[in-house]
Length: 142
Image 1: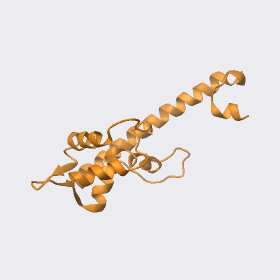
Image 2: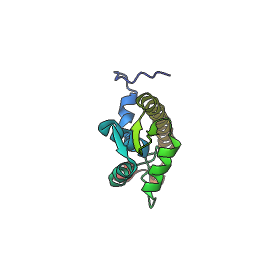
Image 3: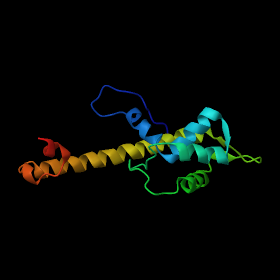
Image 4: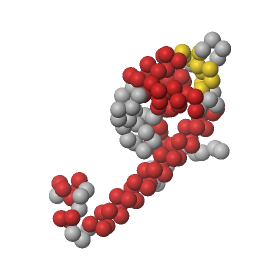
């Protein structure tokens, strides 16, 4: 499955504009770190994820009161086709699987953003007649 991730002149945002959201997820952080370093130990990976700021879920919500280290371990275990552990305990990245996974997740993030936009637009239509009942921030400012 090959996706075209190029910028275009249409009004619809391209998949490139959603790539930054992928790298704020735990999986994206791990992929980015292993891509830069080439290989790392488990402790290095966990420390990098723990020190990362603005980690978010694919729904763009921040992790609250979660054990980030346990989440990083579970993401490494769940994505064994992307992250491979050598005999000496060194983790490496399968580049082809990482690119495919990144493209899939970016498409998921785009769909989630479209759903949120549709919900917001329908909410605006619903309260357009009577701005006093509207709870969105735009109407509060006006």
